[in-house]
Length: 107
Length: 122
Picture 1: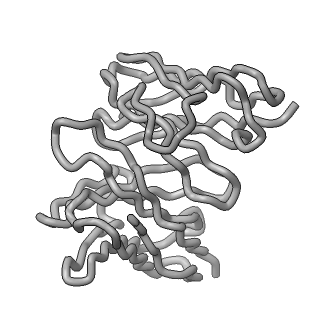
Picture 2 (picture 1 turned 180 degrees about the horizontal axis):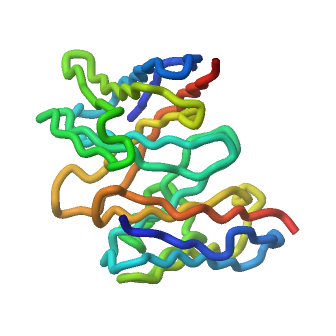
């Protein structure tokens, strides 16, 4: 199975900050990576797929980059509604594994 | 609009089985459906997928022999049945649509059900 390791696991930031979350794959997955946002008690929400394709209606302050084994999710200017947990997921091969998550908290 | 509506919460005893449904609406029922679970306070875990047209399935190895995914195309509904339940199967179970319908796009889980809490307790 392909392992995904996200860093950091916890992140404390302020409104207006620029933040970056990294996701590393245990083997190459080309651009078959997605990012999700999850708020407590809610289903995950798709933000980015194909490593860098912004899902429709997702604000442009979210962006993704990378290919192969290293990927990043960047939020250019944090808004209050962005405080949540973020997961990466590889969709290169079954099983479609997720990273362990990054919890983004208000500083 | 696309909607995935799941069946309600379940409480089961260890050793029993549970069957969760996911009714799709707002689109042509042909996109792969995936099932993902999340134990309390934990991360997301992919369980498997089903193609509603062919019925083809792929399951995560750790669930092989315990999970069965089926569909009823007449009512645009997919099902996930998990047998021989254990306490560590207590989780919220989600269905999620694969937004990529061909091999020229990147797979993505674009719509999710609201989740079904399955509690396994004696």
